[in-house]
Image (cartoon, rainbow, N blue to C red; front, side, top):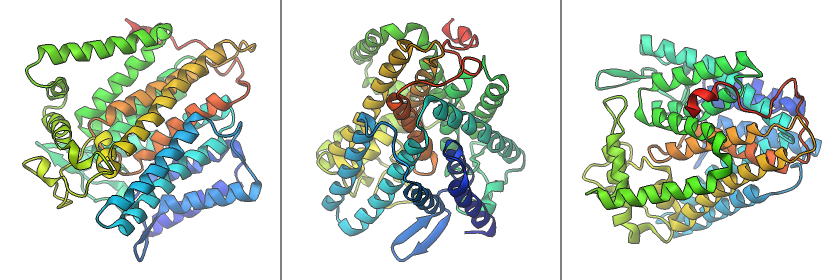
Length: 439
């Protein structure tokens, strides 16, 4: 850890101890935004990432103040706990169960620590709205740094440690990554945050403008096709508010459309991914070939994952001798824990999407005329962008924090007893900007 990273971590830890609960998510977001996940201290087989040290401090605050989750555990909470249990149990089936268990303990600690800390801090619709707005403003310095990175080729966040100083160049184009582990992940986070920024277009214009501009800049600066596609899917999900009463029909329509592609295409329908190249340097063929390889080698990993997938494709990954480049988060779950872990992960997403529908209907039926029915829908659109991103990239850095932020926001709104948002601050109708998307 550099002096700068130690200083920032110290400030964040002190802030989470002294701030009021409503603002306690802010230092967590700062820590996740600006400190690369690899920054930390190694002691034997354990790697204490800076962010995990922060989570320990936040947990200490929760214990000292006796803070709890509003409304108790709900369906999303339980699904994440089941996912965590399966992740730990399946480590026993790997070649080195002890090392695998140590690694999984770190993954589960980060996942549950982030998610449940935010669930404790966010007890109402107001709290979730405040957390989302804070997130958007913190994207501004990230976007500005990535613009600087495009012009200089030097990553200023390397001063914190954990990431390289000079940016990656592919096919003659520089790809900015900010504080994230890869440029695709930086763009993917921005793509998932964009629906939250568009939501605020009417009632908080400056926050919305700052968030939209930052997200668009980050997606562009990442130089990757995946974030562009995830961004468009997230915006389509947001525009789907107009057809919110027909979501079941839309879901079945998409299933029928996919089956139709299977009938008319010579290759499997998922090879439609090879047509999605926005930047001209996309490796979309690899994404489709990886899915085909995963299905072809299903007997090797279905039970509890596998320690070797190098033979799945003709080429491997430079950073590992045992695996192919698993650029698919769903397949990553299968490789790590087999179908049990993959199905648990899908259950978490399914519970969250289901909660979005229940939340906006409950808020719409509320006796309060100020019920913010559009907030859960916007978070659902952000989750949809994440789900689309997972097809093209595995979240391996602090980008996972933004996934759990979205899930925690959805779960907190679902559990909140009564909305308490003032009409002057938040409207139940979507912003007029969505009219452009609906057309």
